[in-house]
Image 1 (cartoon, rainbow, N blue to C red):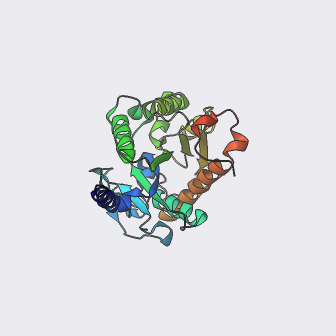
Image 2 (tube, helix red, strand yellow):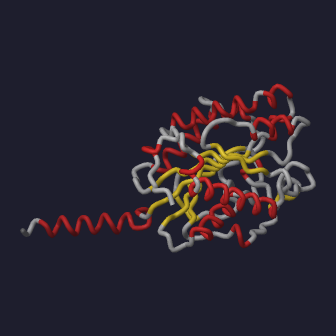
Image 3 (cartoon, rainbow, N blue to C red):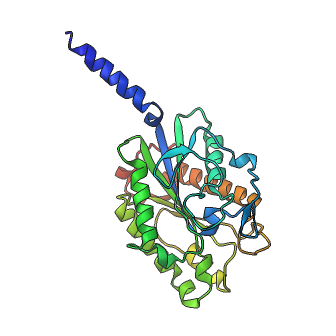
Length: 281
């Protein structure tokens, strides 16, 4: 009988050690180019004004996977150590996470885990399977759930394509490249139904914005949602969203995510339900 005591204290020790990491974590991967990395409040591409709206505030329930793969409390700019060589400001990530917590109510014992991966000025071709950006995204995503069954990757939030508006052939090929990227990612993460919420462009570096948008809005893969940024005000550079626009985008992304989880069973009858882990509400 005496042998049970050391066992119990050992379990207790393990429980205390895990404490903070033992609560469930809903993980969201943030990827794409500069508007996902965040340029809200960045002046002349060089200085961030430091303005953090209340919707983007830090919260002990919102963590971020740093460049060195450590979980830490998230704060703006989320991509500071990820989109290197660029000045980062406010992006959509924290507004998204705060809005979900607001809707769900913070009483639910869930921690939001954000995994920033976006890089400014990148074309969709630079994210194809085997590239350094793709490999890094997969590495960070796998690391985010490593060794903890309570952590689940819920969605990829994707905002990219401004760099694909310069050459017509890039714009024409966008939807094909994006579909391949999603299928490869789902395969490599072993998440065949991974929800992808992509942002339809508000701007572009070239004149083929509508061609890229058409590709984004026309994606035929299941479990891919599109949130439109077209009406959101831009900075004077006509390319990047303002801080206020980023807040609105984050909230739109949150509503799209909530809608896709609550209406899942009504709209996606064709999805293999053995892979879903929740009950229809």
